[in-house]
Image 1 (tube, one colour):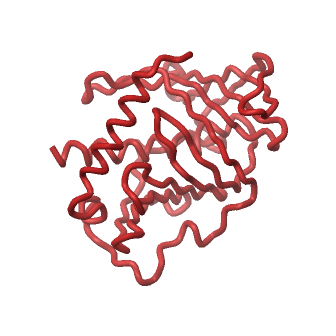
Image 2: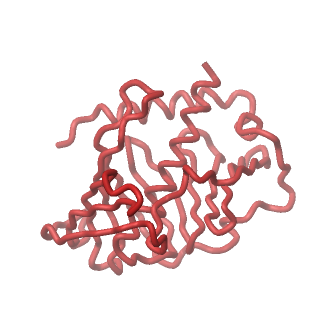
Amino acid sequence: MSRINIRHLVPVFFMASILLTGLSVFAAPPDNFTATMVSSGMEMPMAKMGTKSLVENPGMKGLVTISLADAKKTIMMNRVSKTYYEQPIQNQERTPDVHDPDMVFDKKKAGTDTIDGHPCTKYDAVFYRKSKPEEKHKATIWEANDLKDFTIQTEFTVPASPNHQGSGGKMIMKFKDIRLGAATASMFEVPGNYKKVNSVQEVMGVGGMGNVNEMMKKMQKGQRTPKP
């Protein structure tokens, strides 16, 4: 049971990284901010500065995932046990990159809207690789006009995974408590007194699975909640 939940945990943070660094490239949004990302019934405090991003685990206190695109690695860090684990970003985990010559991004204005009090421009968006034009991905995005065109909400369809029954479907991601320019370099660094370990399980520590189980319940509940 524990192995299954750990295996589910990593894609949660990987998906968060895609949302954070991929879909937002349809605009040229601020690349330095802190916010709370809301998706699938979970709230995840996060930060972004350039190609670096950080997401906090909503179900396990002190667990953080840092993505360093330039260094091509991901770090899972536990602020409670002061441990961390590093792993390279695999080729299949590449997020859409506006500077990748193989990527095509397109968006068309679909109207205006207001999200959490922010006046927004709504767009229908599509992205795909030139090498695989048949694999087009669609999304609807809302850019907040009063936050320098920050992508405040994204709605898209996640493809089903052959390894997980019931996976896939429509997903909505929102940002709240947005603070432009609030991220600092130290947020994405491992403190010098932290111990490097050899696995995700070691970072999570003994006794952490109850919190992970609770997180998964929240995510499943959020996925079952019908769109109003």
